[in-house]
Amino acid sequence: MEAYLDNSATTSCSKAATEKMVEVLTMDYGNPSSMHMKGVVAENTINEAKKKIAKTLKIEEKELIFTSGGTESNNMAIIGSAIANKRAGMHVITTKIEHASVAAPFAWLEQEGFEVTYLNVDAYGIISLDELKNAIRQDTILVSIMQVNNEIGALQPIEEAGKIIKAVNPKTLFHVDAIQSYGKMLIYPKKSNIDMLSVSGHKIHGPKGSGFLFVKDKTKIKPLLHGGGQQKGMRSGTENVPAIAGLAVAAEEMYANLEQNRTHLYELRDYFIAEVEKIEGVTVNGRKDHESAPHIVSISIEGVRAEVILHTLEDKSIYVSAGSACSSNKPAVSATLKSIGLKKELLDSTVRFSFSVHTTKEELDYALSVMREVIPMLQRYTRR
Image 1 (cartoon, rainbow, N blue to C red):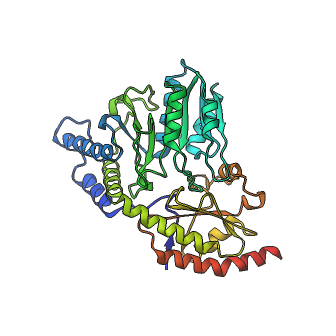
Image 2 (cartoon, one colour):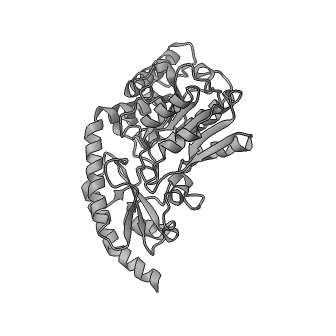
Image 3 (cartoon, rainbow, N blue to C red):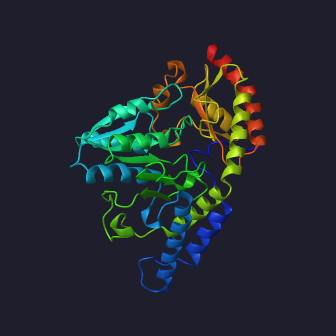
């Protein structure tokens, strides 16, 4: 049996999204900038994709910029808006538990002379709204907060944060990394005072290399890519029409069955947490209730290194992550785990299980049965 439990790293591309991509790749393959009929058909495909995605967020189609994925969307939002608004101020705010595609652009801004305030989180990975309020100044031009943490599933109070930001300084832009939340929950940027929102296609059963950035109309932001002026000059380069079409189909599918999917994911999560905690030496990180993301469970295993349990499970065709997959090629202590105050000896003993709409209870039972067998054995081996 196989149990793929690494869906926060990537999901399988849905059948409908794949079929749509093949159709565009083989039949409607024109360049959307071409003036002949093949180009018009390709442009119409992009416009249709915009309609589908805009509907899920209750936004205008013109407020969407298609990108190559989450990293580009985050970089465009953070660097593009900071550079565009630096005359108004050089102060920006983010949290200590952001994904590398947010943390790295903020580190770059620091090198360029911007002042960055990093918000703390509590033991569950949640920011303090009072700390946020006190951090905003008249020269604060940007706040960036991820909605769902990719390692422990912490769910930030985005709506409350948006209200505070705009109440203290209406000119401060609010960016939300929704890469782990889009498709799992309802997000209405305008209701939550969000100016920019990043999404990645391969987290929602769309293709890799696809994503988008919502940019609220009239928001000042500079492009990162310059060239042919596609997407109103905001993202030059011939659009990846097959990926855009596949992304839109995947988004539509996720939101068509949102409540059913969420119920399924929470049932899996509740069951997995209840069973995995019965294994001696295993603790669950973050909140265990439904005030957390429905698809992520982070566990620490006393006396067993994450890499060891990961490869032991892999030998049994069970696939999980040690922290964020995007950082797995650069072994480093997780900023998220350090920020929540995880015991030093557990920092290198933490693995992430993440589910999708296709995950079954049978897969979890298989993973749990293997873990019940191998964890005590690995713990004994370590203690020798």
